[in-house]
Length: 438
Image (cartoon, rainbow, N blue to C red; front, side, top):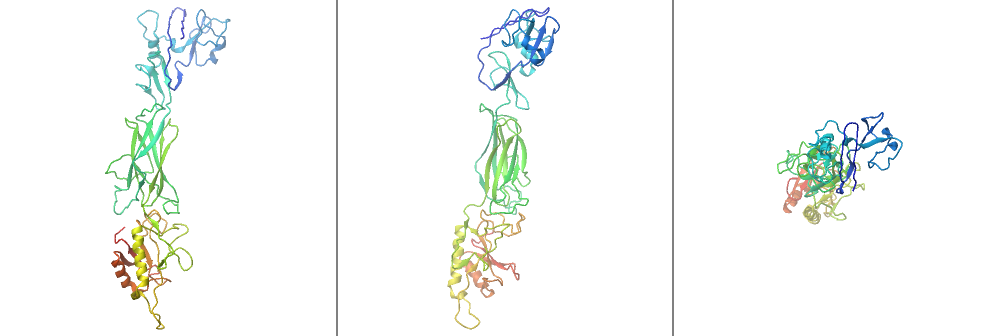
C-alpha cells in the first residue's frame, strides 16, 4: 500500500490520496505516467522535464510529504516532484473546487485511456504496432501494455495433393489445399484485423526434378472454397485476420511434383513465422524392378535408358498394377514363338531381346519435362501408367516385323500400344498399360 499527498503548489492546492492495490500479472511494459514534472518555489516554476536526468532529480525532494521516488532524496533544495499526469491545468475539474480526481486526470492526459475500463484484453485501445492502453478498474491508472507477445500458426486438413493438370483443369479448380493462418496473443485470445503475409517456396531438387531454373513455386489466393480458382495465384499474398484471428487462403499445386514450404508471417509482433510442408505428388509409384530377363532399364553403354544427369536421373516409376501388366507383356513377348525372329542364315528362330524400357514416370509423377523447362514436353507419363518402349534402329528395339503383333499383345493384357515419333531415331511404342489417358 502506498499513500501519497501533494500540498501547496503556488496558488493551487491539490490534495490527492490514493491507494494502489495489486494489479493483475499482465505483461505491463510501463505504467503511465512515465515522465515527471518538477515544480520549484524558485526558478523552475511550472517547468516540465521529459527525463529525470534533465530535472536533476537526485537533488529533488518532497517537503512535508512522501517521496514519489524514495531514491530521490535531498534536503538542500525545496523541490516538489510528482507525475506529469497529476499536474494538469486544462482538465475539467472535479465538482470539488481545487481538486482533480485521478480518473479525470488520466482521461485528460492520456486520451488513449478515455472510457477504457477493466483488465486486458477487455476493450483496449490498440495501435498499429500492437501497443494497447488499458485503465485498470483496480487502481484507475492508465497502463501501457505490449506490444503483445503474439504467435502465428498454420492449419490445414492435409499436406498432400496431386499435381495440377492444366489441360484438364484450365481454371485450376482442383489440386488445391485450404489453409488457415491463426494469430493469438499471449493469453490465447485471437488477434483480429491483424496483418499477415503468406509465401510459398519449393525444394529445388524434389519430386524427381534436379534442374532448378525458374522452378514454379506454387500458387496462393486469399480465399477458400470448392470453386476457388488458383491459376492466377501468386507466390506471396498479404492478408488480414478476421474476428476469430484467422486468415484463410488456398494453395494451388503446380504441374510439377515436389516439396513446397508455406510460410506465414505477422506484419509485426509475432515471436516467429509459422511454416508447413506440402507434398505435391502422385502416391503409390514404385521403381520398376530391375533384373528381369524380359526387359531392361540399362542401355548397351551402361547408362540408364532415358535418364539425364542434369534434369531427371530416375525415370522408371509405375504403379504396381501397371508394373504387373508390363511384366506380363514382356514375359509373353519373350516366351511365345510367334515373336521370335529367324536369323538370315536360316538357322533356328531365336527369342527377341529384352524390351528396352524408356521413360515411364518420375518418382512423384506429375509433368515430365524432358527439356527441363517445366512444360509438358513429354505427353502423358504423369501418373505411373504409361511407358515408352524402344522401337527404332537402335540396339534392343522391337523390330518392325513385330509391331502389329506387339499391339495385339498389349490389347490382350488390357493395355494400349501405339507408335510415336515414327520414322525417326526416337521412334518408340507409347504404351498405356492401364489403357487410359494421362
